[in-house]
Image (cartoon, rainbow, N blue to C red):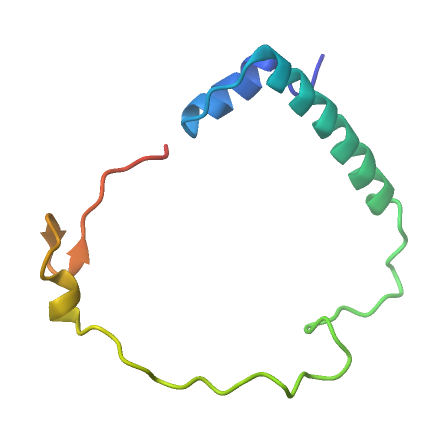
Length: 97
């Protein structure tokens, strides 16, 4: 059985509001096969004696700038032109299942 059938890909694409042609489905199927092969290779790497890292670099970076507060809209100004709101939240239509 094919892991990524055309029907499944088209159903997923429809759920996120995309249209896929048959050629695009075939291309996606080939890409997924490549990704799965790469993941299999990564899963074969022995990481038993490797210590987990919390930060991706050995030394912390010290060149990150300090955040400086600049002008920002007040909540009242930001909500002034909102067509539909609920308390202090903007209400938008649901676009993804």
